Image (cartoon, rainbow, N blue to C red; front, side):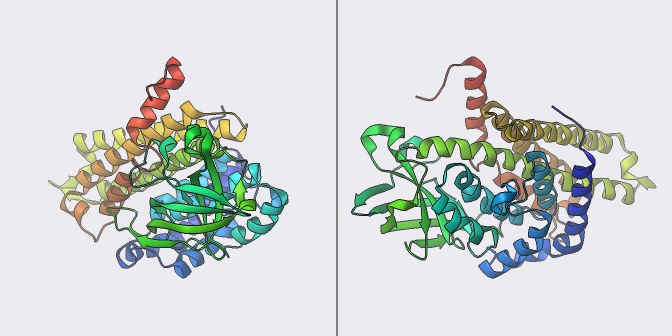
Length: 388
């Protein structure tokens, strides 16, 4: 794989960072305290500020109104946004990954014409609904049902920990259409809230506070059968493909958060003086900075390796899980070290370090825990699954 960014990618990185410094970083701490979660109108307004740079429909083909970026360029955008305000980073990732990518690959011409323009214009906010109260890592055991009734499927069930859930106009929902078939009985549905209403309830959480996270309840929710995404019984396959990109995005986000913690630590270590000299001259501080730099560069390499394979259209279960497992745990360690370097100021809300730490802690759970990622890496390496 290519390790060095090309000139276009370097310019994109520079432009993204300038936008973050001007528009997003100045509001991040205030919004994180004020909005739990972001109201829909504010979330949409923020995404509209980011959209011209390529944040919405990033890797979607230009013929469908997207920006046609490669995945490494997409990683640059998400890393820079997460460095500034990870909650907003997750809102953007979900807007992109929940519908656009799969719809482009699997949707009918009619579905693309109906949904893509509205999602790109941010007239419709999207979410991805897989996790249930009793179904997390074991997605094959989905309990939400979809029963055919004439020209509709009737959905019943509950989804939980759904990012963007409360503000979403469209939910991409995985439901069982035939439990006797196991994973081959899971189907993916595009549920447009305007024509197929469902209820939501906000869930408060430790980090990523501004990202709406919700419970979704489907009670006799009638969804047109034309809204099946892909084919009947293909939902589990689509979910696995979605996870490749989303897990890579979690690694991008974690790297951005850790980079923000490192940047703050470097500045503080240069300016803070103890015993008559900057604390950056102390060997133990230098050791922590070195550990952070090495870990962050390693995480960046891993997620860009996955991006490289995604851009080539190759399967990357091993690489995406490696990136997700390493980067999310790395971000916890890096933000913890940053707090240590800042001393008491590290846990003060006057500094963003405590936000970085809280946000990093959340990403180990999203879209498969670290333990699940390790099992996937081992499965791909040994050719022997641990899942029963």
